[in-house]
Image 1 (cartoon, rainbow, N blue to C red):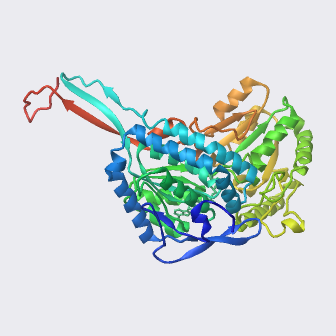
Image 2 (image 1 turned 120 degrees about the vertical axis):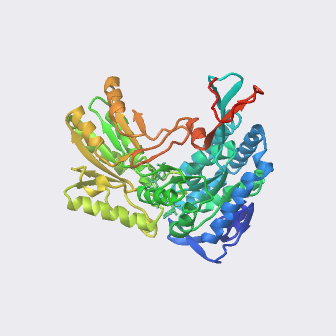
Image 3 (image 1 turned 135 degrees about the horizontal axis):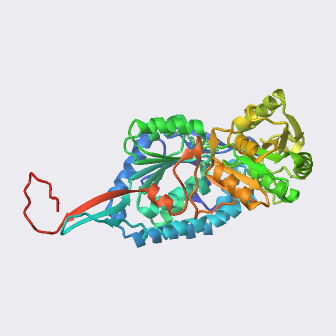
Length: 504
Ligand code: NAD
């Protein structure tokens, strides 16, 4: 068991966080969470079922109505969110170690993420007292017509296992700043960091029930939450298939959703670039985090005139990538987070070979004793790829890139847009006119020009097509998590004919 000062992790069994307390699940059932470097269990999390989810939603609804939260001034709410940011910064390295142990992501990346995360809490905390409505002309005398923005109520958040805390922050921080209450259902493959955050929520002084965490499987805890009539909005981050299911569940209660789903993002390289720089960008776009990022640039289109030189440089760079234990600072790629993920990646590489693609680098589990127990996969470059091959159509969520040549801008745009997804995209070129033509025509929520995976919590991000709807980040998110109420006030004091609508 890892030594940590986060109290919930000093126990090898973790409970649910409901109404400000850690409580046992009503069923008494727990499941193992596995360390991806060894495949061994390192703690057990509680399996919430419908009755636990009911209790969490009830606690969140009661907190929403509690004057201690509902009538807290906006400035004080912002102050609480800032306090949470300060506590998260104090514990950043500890939270990073928990993430790495739970999902196998690199400790150096998790430390950077956790040290940066509090900035985004501060950014959203600052919005607590800046969300404003408007006054509207009414064409009647002595009457005021205005809109106010108010919180929605209980927001249900369902999160994935890759970077759980960072992905949660982009919605939790603004939700709290606006005055919503929250029930979080983290992925059953990485629950520990969200439970650690729950402790900080209490320490920061949020009233009980404002934040609740129900752990458990998607098919039980997740289903119960997404069918619950007491939830005002769902925020889902995960696969397109699960998103479709959740949207259908939510529709039965007419509950709106914000969906951040999967991707199969195109990464385009033109002949006018510095090849080494573009190679570095493509490597960072698809191999960072062992390819387990929603924006992974997994379909790479290279201008035909430099295709062979580019592939040669990419293969050489890929050969220098160090696959290793995620706690070591010189590791570039750690294991995949789940054994099922490893099997999935292997089977897609095999199907790519059957469909006519060729492996130019990687393509298998590393063959060293030291890594044989973990869920590692070599960074893999597949050439002679085609958009209709299964590994180019579906999201693998692993370190595999397919390369295709193109001969004209028109061909490139049509190939790049030939996908059911529309999350992100990237282009490498020195020609700004061409870069902007790409930006205008690509069907994706994010466009990177001469960079990839750069992100900012100050801009609104989200998907097109089957990559989802709704936006995270920037001021836009404040509209996502609040609702408009129109208020009309008559201060004329006049007696009206009750059967005739007043025209002036
Ligand atoms: P997943 O869809 O398997 O699971 C995500 C969450 O949904 C988990 O908490 C899971 O328990 C829950 N869930 C599963 N079935 C459910 C059901 N029937 N009802 C309610 N909840 C249910 O995704 P994952 O494997 O954890 O994460 C990887 C996926 O997430 C990839 O597709 C990736 O692209 C996507 N992702 C998207 C973004 C983005 O911002 N667009 C960010 C990160 C990850």
